[in-house]
Length: 487
Image (cartoon, rainbow, N blue to C red; front, side, top):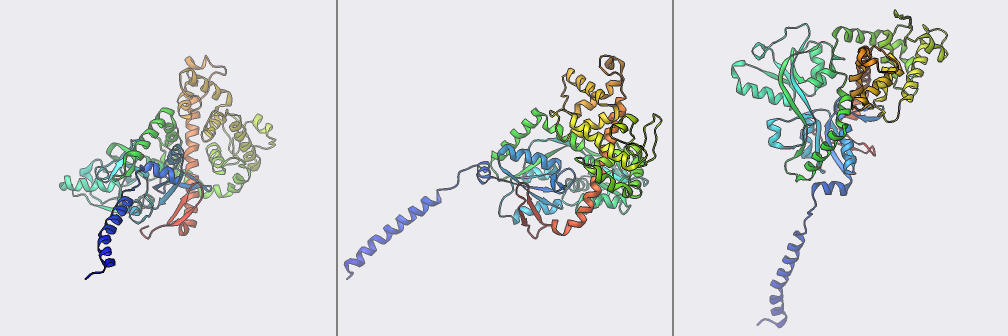
């Protein structure tokens, strides 16, 4: 016979099991009901994947830069959180990274276009600019005029939208007999095309324009696809909160004109390309610049020495004895009044000329109103360096009178050429000016400046590649983590 205690145990055991199961069930039901955006804001961190590159993300002077970086920084500020960038050296390694991460990425932002395959895997943000997909060949080789004339393998970046496009061509047009091969990144692709190791490649028009100033033999064969949307990408399993925040952010960007300013900053000067001029510039970077680099560095002051060098190249091609028909002379092509203002006794003395030119350009920048963004002040100042500060003021006034933004270089540079039309300059205080020349002058300097920055970046990349591979950088705290073996 069971004892009284044993009977009690038998009675309470199922009750205890029931009570415990209810308690556990209750705990399991206490799920985190916060949206993804709320979780990010609570954690105070926005984790984003991107790819190293001139349009995306790079380090310049120990500071991060790139159109995507600046947009992401503005977005993280909009959310009130810290931006943590996870940069990768290839698209493939970036795409594989999610599976090896403990923390999820909120966004992928690397100048990626909207494609059919990506739409199946990702949620897309709104388009913030458009690109064209081009077939590129090496100048001096046979140029295909259409798909039917393609006989050589086409090279593309691995896992890119361009690889997806060629695969689609192969499926839909088997009669074309198109073949393709891949490189891990765009820099390797462009370098091999420039050197003649390959004959054909696919890239976006913005990438081609940015790289032509270091790889001048690259040229467009024809357009493969037009008006491709560049977007940010989010995981499809995410809720709507981040996507809604991205949409609201880009709406504000368009209203405020911030997106237009960023496009001007990174793409506003790459609409034209001069093959002969670029080759001459690259030769003189090797032959002439080493003679004067220390001089530019010494006297740059608050300026980037590479900007000062770019101005000097535009003015004199780094020739201390240069002379123009109008009488300006030297490395920085100074007039006598400007030379005397800054204590120059000999305009053909390279040291005196560079020192005075740097001081004069700095003076022009500092003279500009604070309503102009800091990153745009050099372009206004360079226009003033070319046509005079007073004419620049006239152009800004005309811009404002026409309802434009006189603090935007994009809008003012469209107005400056009007200063050479009588129907406009007759109403200005200082009259006629060579406006077209000033706009071209600024554009050329920006191209030379970009090229010099690129050369510096390649040197730094070579020196730092061992420690750069597999690093992730917090842009606020400079935290660094080891990345997964997938990279």
